[in-house]
Length: 143
Image (cartoon, rainbow, N blue to C red):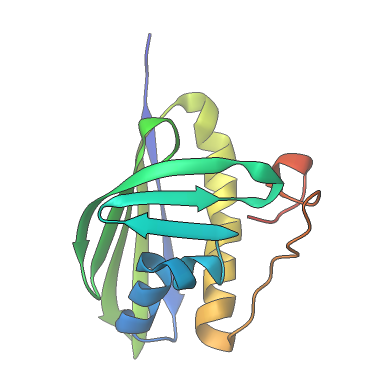
């Protein structure tokens, strides 16, 4: 049976929606907290991660300052919905179409990515180590 599932995380950030959106939707933004290299051409995305893993993805929808949706690994759909709340940004991350096998790893992995986003958006720092052998697949909590 081909069963799929979804996950969701919420995050409150002190940064404004436009700044959080820029971090999620631009090559430089993503490279500052999430991926080692990001390259966008039209609606096509190419991400490189520590350890050499790559993702060819596609932007599925975008509404500046509010919504960024893309394809993700193994055909899942990843959406970031932003709204103003409490003087900052409320972020809702939803990933749908996950296989049950990918659910556990992705659920934990998004905690790493979201905390790195919060550190970048609120404090201007990059929590990652950028070491080619110290990455998620090698057992490090580094995206």
